[in-house]
Length: 443
Image: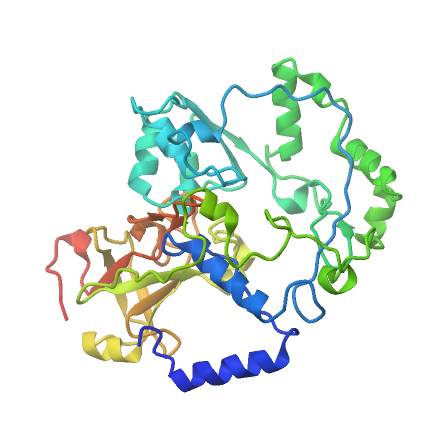
């Protein structure tokens, strides 16, 4: 079968879950954009949880709550003349409620079919060369810009294309906005500087305030520094900057008694057209989409190629920390995980260096060492994201490992929510350095 999991194992697992219901969760995962049908795949997971009775019941999914911090007083923000929706044909992604970054490049490359042409970018703390799929398209968009500003703590790839780089100090050298993420118990957390900023770096709030001053927008930043602003916010919820410096994290009682909303509130309504858990999605049906998930068969790798899967390492934050001295010592490079059967077929050994070539002929800039392991299927390989840096100013990270981002040239757009599925890329192995025009070795 497609999953290679024995049918009896699936049946036994289903029975165990049913026996434990409603105290059972099928977790949707964090990285949910895979193949372009991800809205429906995520819905299928949500429906399974609904059938198990997990929503809003003890042992299942609880209803998180957060502390609401007031904003420091400022004039109303002007209404922008354009929005991210102008980067797409009219009426596309009508159900999307958050900004889609996928249209930024399309809206920057001149196109007579779009009523939008972006001419300037301010890129804050994001290495677009590693975070956006299809690097070729990203570069084409950058070359059509009139002006590019990059704010970052490190000389990431994107800084090399900037007209202006505004160097930001690291999180250990600055205050950040109060953390108020929703959780089981509402809480606030303070990130404060442990040391003074090095060199000519500045915190993000200082950069924003100075730019506002140059533009005559001081009314939007009426506080003198972020400490004054944070203290004002904290006092509005019964704390203070002095207290938070001392304790770091503060919990608050829940405002509403709806932790388990379905068991505590018999009349609770969900945010759906019917107010109920909808297995048949009326909102999707109204927009012409399948109201029930249908199985989609995804493209399979051609002969001699393997599906490229990617993920994270616990000591690194995407590609942002690979040049950090302490974290670099914990993991200096990534490996390509290869199933033993595939390793035998290709006569590959642990620690052997290979280059990777994807289905579009793109070859990794640097080699990556092989890790032979049963932890990956025979039709796939796996790499940790963020390595293979090509900027020589990243003196530790440069040239260590291979970049999965380089090899993601094919994407699958989800027609409902616009997410970019990037797991339809396939790679093969080159045993000799292709950048020296040496002959390719095939299995």
